[in-house]
Image (cartoon, rainbow, N blue to C red; front, side):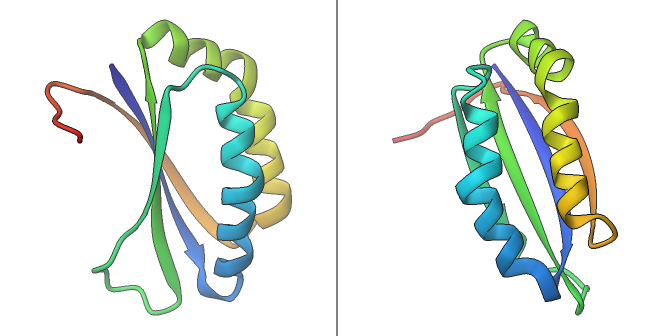
Length: 105
């Protein structure tokens, strides 16, 4: 399994609007693609920024084929919508991690 990790630094002035949009629109749009099994959205608690917050959204996918299909067929459209709404108010980077072991209840 793989984790597609999206880390976003968002300006505090639009943080609540962005969180609402992520939870109600963007993440559901990503999940409806069928390429991910689950997701987790988290907020970083300790950082040195006073004018922004840092969030991660981690999407769990079965394998590289599902991730690649998401990137090829869906990602650019979904990322463009994010950019259109919040351009200049965020920074983002994406990473892919392989799950080696896990224990969830």
